[in-house]
Image (tube, rainbow, N blue to C red; front, side, top):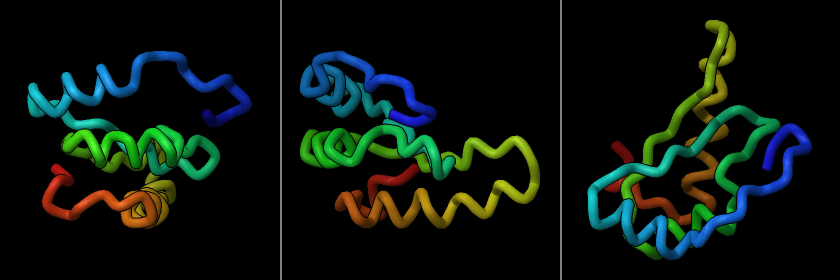
Length: 85
């Protein structure tokens, strides 16, 4: 994932199924260098039927502009607009 950190290791299918069942949203981090979760996991979450929250991860007013990049990533990965909370 971002900042040179290794990608988290977990059973994505199991986690996303639990999220979908509980109505728990998966966060899409808009910070450009983060790109969390990776696109392949975003697509897996879409396939599992989860909800999504698109978060700027802003720490300063100018960083709110990152929202556009997060929304673009969501669109690229097939996140339906009606599943964004």
